[in-house]
Figure 1 (cartoon, helix red, strand yellow):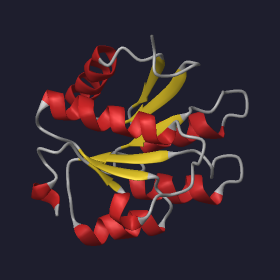
Figure 2 (cartoon, one colour; figure 1 turned 45 degrees about the horizontal axis):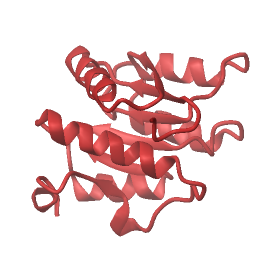
Figure 3 (tube, helix red, strand yellow; figure 1 turned 180 degrees about the horizontal axis):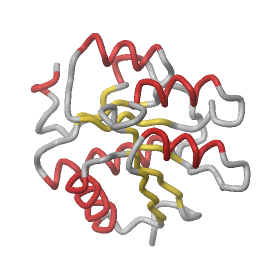
Length: 158
C-alpha cells in the first residue's frame, strides 16, 4: 500500500543527467504513488510553472546551479507569483554553505537537501521531503528543521 492516497506529482529541475537518473531510480525504489517530470534548466521550469494550462506539481525539487536561470532566481520568481507561492520547493543541490542555506530559508524554500553521494541516503532524504510536504500543515518549518539529511550525513553538515 502506498503512503499517499493520491499520486503525488513531483517536478525535478536539474540539468545534471546523472542526478536526474539517480533521483528517478531512488523514487522508483521507494514504491510511492508518484509521477515525476523533469526540466533541464530554470527557463524551462518557469515556462512550465507559468503555463496556466499545466497542472502545478505537488512538490518541486530545485537545483541551484542550472544554466539559463539558476535556482535562486527561480525561487524568487516562484515566491513572488500568486499562483505559485504556495508550491512547496525543496532545494536539491550539491553544495552546503550556511549563509546560502539561511538565505534560501528567508526566501521561502520549504526544505534544503544537500545531494548525498550514497544511494540509500538519497532515498532517505527524498522520502523525508515527500512525507513532510505531504502533511496538512505546509507552513515553513522552524529553521533548525529546514535541512533534511539522513542520519549518516547529519554530523557532516552541522
